Length: 420
Image 1: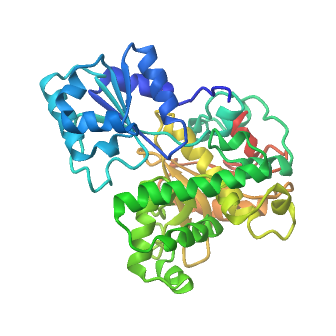
Image 2: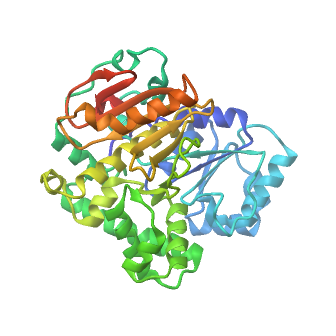
Image 3: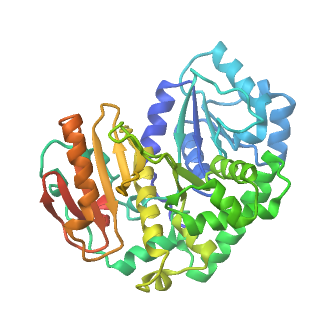
């Protein structure tokens, strides 16, 4: 497979220039090892993977010598396999010598939530997240700059290059292809087999090993439910009843799926504009290709007008694209969804630390209309009354080719605008 340049690479370099330790974590098979090897080669360092039995045993037997007796930066791949013993040795090494960029650690589990690692390296580490490939990376396009959505000029969204023409089927094929580098190059039937094997490997090798879980079969059942429910609010009690599992098991297993980057939660947004905002997060599967594979769907199935999965999977696809772009950007707006008891619903609300807000609706239609922005318009007016100037843009992303402004700070754009 041809090497795909990763947009997060400059951030990794910047972090190594300024922090003693850099941790790059993300799902298995998303490209961490390839990127880590590139960093080691470019900086004349050393690459070592704890996936290798001999390397892992050497690190566990004498972690101090393993860490210090090699050329730096030392890249330690799959650091979670070294547990607390190796991570504590990293802490001791950088406390003695605070030179930036001595260690790049990668992991297929969330570094901060692995129970076998109690040392967080707080004050010494820069954490970076590597997602599967974005559409911009797959298309060799420049990174999407979400900052443009927060621009002060009314024509900011229309000043960049025109997006490449894509049909609705093109989008559905992108949804089903996903972003795992190896899987994205396979034909549909082989890709489905790849995802089945991937899930079995991650659940058996990572989740069960780390969590010592007793109901392994429930993991696959729950993950398939997440795939079918991606983009919906998380109702633990309802899910437990539907799947025949207890609430504690659902909560615990979902947390483990987050730890190994199979799913992520989108919290509910509120600035006290309404007293009864719903607090449930939305659950999104990390890669729509994985979701489609688990559901046995291809682009043709999603093209059927009555397909119940097309809209939710497209919403997850766009949410994931934005999250992937933010992981490679210095801009860091927080991502949320919104729903209240008056039935106002907005797929995505981005909020910067200065309080600036962008609201996004995602529709699987090729014929968007301004009425689909009515909840965004309502939110704009509420924010304008409470914090004038904070609402920056409301955007309807769709699968057609229309691109225009439809009202005060309200815009309609093709989804492909994000990788123009």
